[in-house]
Length: 76
Image (cartoon, rainbow, N blue to C red; front, side):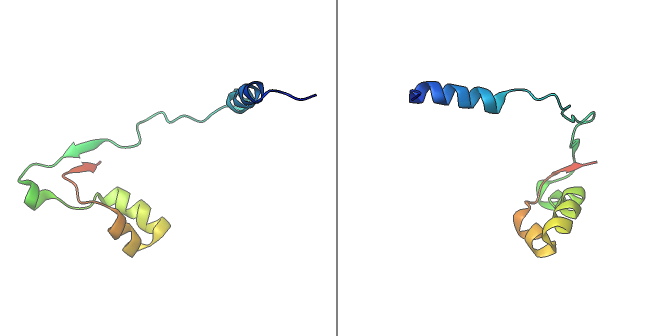
């Protein structure tokens, strides 16, 4: 039996968005807590050390340095 495309798409969306019985892990604390450093932005801007460490472990130091931006707010 043929199904019209609209009905097929609706059923597909329902199947993909259906909640599963498995429990989804949620974080109890926020991922980052940013603090702004005092002083002029020219002197304060640098890489966030925690983010740099994480990225350099996954990607290597050169890629991490190229991908990251210098910021005035930092994770603590």
